Image (cartoon, rainbow, N blue to C red):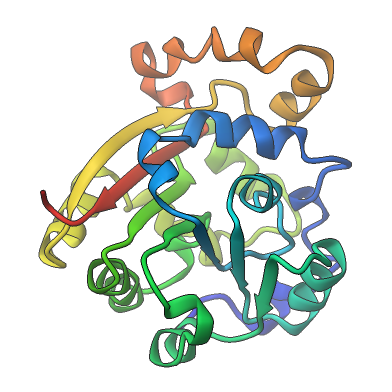
Length: 238
């Protein structure tokens, strides 16, 4: 079950989650992209929110399912992505996993952007099981727990609640590895990325080419505490 309270889903409450265009989302996707993505025609985004990271999925996959339990967010997504290739399913993950409908027909790339720290370990296990049973690929993008700027943001942003966000501090590589391997899967890729804080990154992608900005990403490996996000790509053992 989702840990966020109902009022945390209010449409106007998290305006910082939306940008004027998709350039920042496209930049993050360029950092997340893995050659294995090419094996999948279908993308499923669990907890799509207001679609902050969804545009590149719509652009790069033949069919996209956006799973979102909040009515206000789901309505926003339907208006934002009014395309035949996009299906918005207004449902909680428990119901989706029990009855995925068309989304459950065949392997898919299953994306979770900033979702895992809002749900319980049992709920994460259901996601991992879904990936394993469908021979799918799982992609997780979460806040980097060792980046001090994220904690400052949580504490100073009026629309954010430390109680609702705090679990991200516990979800490090060892925690993910333990949970993913317990589900019979393996981590394919783990890295920290986005050397620029999101608010700065969004500004920079409007001014500079992605290729130029990516040239700074090596710093995320040298100075892991500067990476804004951690990326985990996982799947079935081969």
